[in-house]
Image (cartoon, rainbow over all chains, first blue to last red; front, top):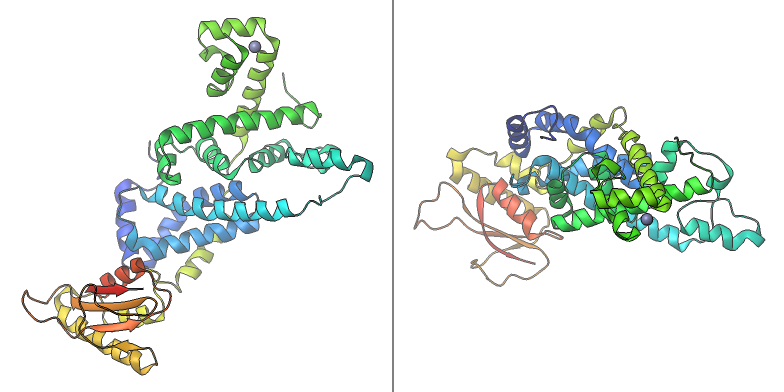
Length: 207
Length: 179
Ligand SMILES: [Zn+2]
């Protein structure tokens, strides 16, 4: 299974070689080929269209600038994913730290319910989600975004982007066993979050 | 088989009961809690599969290329563009390129960038942050031939990797590098 969908491996290698020599149209062809993959991944990692645009653009810009250090040991698409991973995990961490610092929630609950509201927020379900039904996919997206970055990266790459264990190990620079255990934990945590949503009536289980 | 063991198996197969070994499947017929876990896992998996990746927005590739238009491979900046312009890749003109590089470095000196002259060799004592030292041309210089005049250019915030890439780009051996 090749993940370099439209272009053959040889075509990609040829384009990379030309782009490395500064051929911009060749690089543009590679951007066309991989933009959806990279943007889709980064978007799921960050959950924000504007940030996703910035990080995905930065990914391609850095890729172009670092092409001389790309030696073709990894496939081009895992190399791109690696740049995107490093950038988006950094941004996601920075966002989380900023959010951790601020205890205030978007819509604070009444004071007598304060502890309750905060506890729920900590579990990853914002209070607004208790008062308004959301689109199912939005709930799923939220559950993914609530995962720790490293679990999120694995689950998005494997379950949504369809990458193999081996490629994910290369993208994230970790052993295969780590990929599998992170995937296991991510699945279990996602299931727990959705279960919570079912229990509070946010999500309906179709029989 | 304990609930805990069964649930581990369930996570691994996304709650698809048919994929379970007989012992675990038998547990499910007796344990409602685990059945509910299996159902939640199937639901989670189903929702994940429905989650279509977002496509890149309209004009994304053009915006990338607009940025790339300003950049060079190897993270080149103005001086690299100047070197590239004066010394375009042309393997048969190794000496010419080297001469052009030397010329550019002299021009840079004129531009107020500190330029070192002195005996350059590996490990030679240059000081200052990110000193870039370019040496003999990669091609063109025959063995035993004296290397062209070395030039050492003080550059702020240059990493060794960038410097190596630059030296490759302009077709010279990197003789020495010191941060
Ligand atoms: Zn059980």
